[in-house]
Image 1 (cartoon, rainbow, N blue to C red):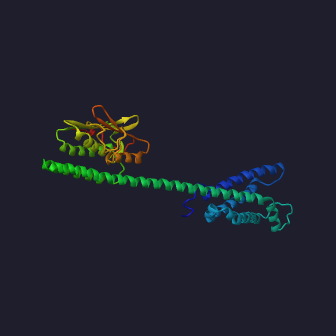
Image 2: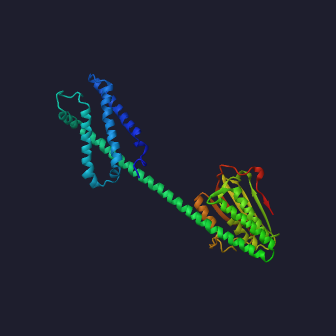
Image 3: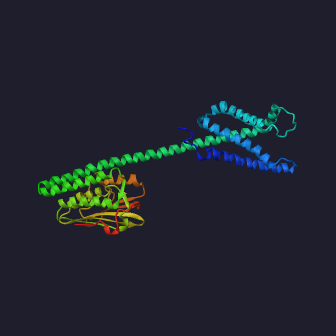
Length: 383
């Protein structure tokens, strides 16, 4: 990587040199005031010219050091600092003073007849320590900038790696879920083939539409609640064909949350769990419903179903009574919610005395930037 790509704003040549010019103004003003108190006649412009050249020269030298020696400065060991950087500091300090003396031969000194070497020695005696201080301040500044940039790069790389890992896990969960859903639906078709071929054909058409919808979503992590409900309504249609006359289903969504964003295909596993572990085991008529509304600043989604309660679902992980199982549906939902939201969500399964079960999601309430439906077009499904 080039140093230019990682150059902080502070080391942009214009910004960096402007800082040195500001220092020159401060030192020039201080010297001018001191000279006036001693009745010296040097103008402020001349004093500023001397300091400006001095500090801008340091700025240029430091920029060259950053461009050419950045990696060595950032990674220099103690041995390298003693053997190479210390001599370099002396060399740069003398060189800077030599250039300044050469460019200002008429600056008043004790003896106007001094040669260049006399003048250089005179200024080194008074300025060498100051030059070394400037060099080492810049050395440790560059070293600190290097440490900070490497730390930031590690943090960015860590965040990117974590994001890529989360995406990979989400893709794996999606790949796990789709075959599971397909397998269960085809089982329903297989059962219908022995009782009603027309219904089986209709279910296959509906399944084809659902798969097309899934493919059209591609790798989308979030969709609007409206789109998710549209998918669920097709799933309910398939199940209604199988459980004709037995299940009463409904979908109730408040208009204000229609464009709320939810993880793709997050409700289907809950519906499937409700059907196969609740509705299917209910004697006589059963019901299954979805409710969604704003609650305490969050999106609350509840899947309700009648049935035999939670204790009959030994093959699914159940939070409310502590039983652990190995089912795909609920475990998949929990894992995906954890990846999407971390600790900023709640998921619970609640059982009531009559065997009714509520699967409740509390999700952060965020909305799609482009509304997909108006309140008059609220999706509603009642069977």
